[in-house]
Amino acid sequence: MFWLRVNMKRIWNRIKECLKDESGIGVVEIILILVVLIGLVIIFKAQLTELVQTIFSKITSESGKI
Image (cartoon, rainbow, N blue to C red; front, top):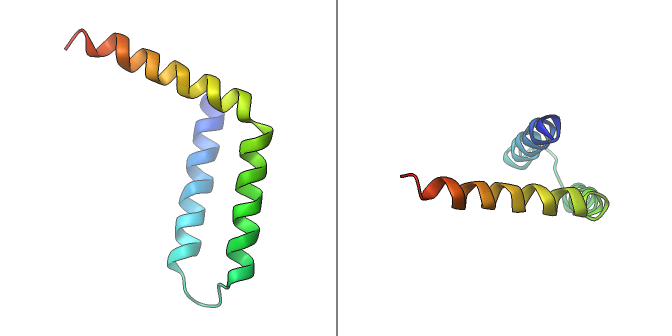
């Protein structure tokens, strides 16, 4: 699970860098990036749902200690 978060963070940082760089990025590139991201979400939907539920349950249980 840790490697997934690290890789997703790297991918997200790379996407942000690409969006900030305006030297030739076009609509087609943005659409392709979105298609890939949507495909990854569809493929890993179960794992992502489990990860988010785990995070929220941990936040809920830890918030009572504060």
